[in-house]
View 1 (cartoon, rainbow, N blue to C red):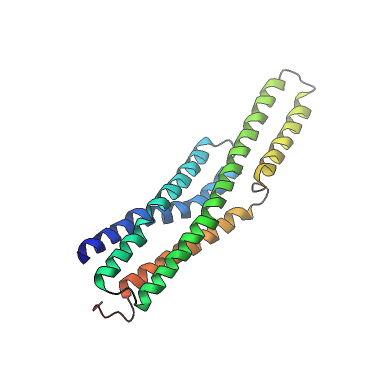
View 2 (cartoon, rainbow, N blue to C red):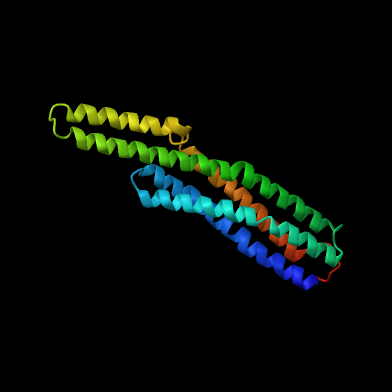
Length: 195
């Protein structure tokens, strides 16, 4: 039974945590691209997909510690220091993901959508006013300024380029925590199981 739980635990870690670490790492550069070019629908769609992957697989990731506990119970190592450290780091990684990574992804996604909406408004106004030669420049310029301000004011993120840098930092911390847990699971310092 131990091998069965161990196989499920490892598969759950690969299938659930792997996509979150990759998608979360791809999100900050994708957000920078989408904010730099609000008219790029493909960049916005990619960002929505990456966020959805993070959200869905984070939910599936609950299976990893559950199966890990079942494996530890069947191995009789629940009191080992390496396992307790791994469980603590797993809890911290989950807190970082839920409290710092996913909410900031949502804020950036809202900023990208607001910027895309403002950009679309600017294009429509520019097209509508093109027929008037005197008014064209003034109206388009005003709309462009309003569009940019509106996108930044929508969430306060677009005006602050450091938001993607902070998100990348929190994502790196999340990934580092999971890498440490993986190392502890393989090395198992002080374990009497022979590994």
